[in-house]
Length: 290
Ligand SMILES: [Fe+2]
Ligand SMILES: [Fe+2]
Image (cartoon, rainbow, N blue to C red; front, side):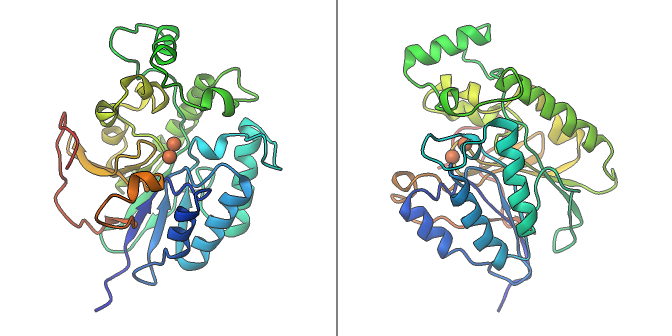
């Protein structure tokens, strides 16, 4: 029997890797009305991002995309050398041509099973406030990361132009997004979609705690409560799992790199966000799901 349409989610497709590209080529909806939330890190090259989103937009009823840090890189060998905000706006323009929903569009409402919910694609970035213990300032946190040899490539490839810094860009995005969320229909729950988790807890299981400073902002710590989230969808950490914080379901839906997903028993596939499928695996303050 064909299942009813679902609100599906996936992230970190990283299609520069041939094995991941094949995964995307094989990625079809399980039901003709499925929506697909793509929570960032499709790729680094504009042409790769456009290729994947075009393919998916031809198959899914609605595709919603938010940028990851990789889309915002300006690799030296990408023919598109746009940086920062201009690069983001260029990608938004491509999405508009494809009919893919971005953080710059009116928030679509999922009316299918488990709905209605307002789907909120967000581009919030990070501001180095998820600092490791014993590092009271951004400078100290960055120094710790250099000492540990776990500096995110964003430091060299993700340019914040025209903002003076990535953290300034983050704060502008947070302010702008908060204003839009305050104006939403409060009677309808939300599904919040962002490349980074809105709360810090998911980063506690990172192998290198120094890396958390590139994984979100403390400014959004209560957004899942404040903005009535039925679920929060994120990626970036490459630790796919389901957790619950303050009663809200958080879904890390990343595929990750071939070396990460190949050893797993199950081939990566979109996760069903709605209708609700199963009990989450861990609870607030919990540890990595098995
Ligand atoms: Fe990623
Ligand atoms: Fe990422």
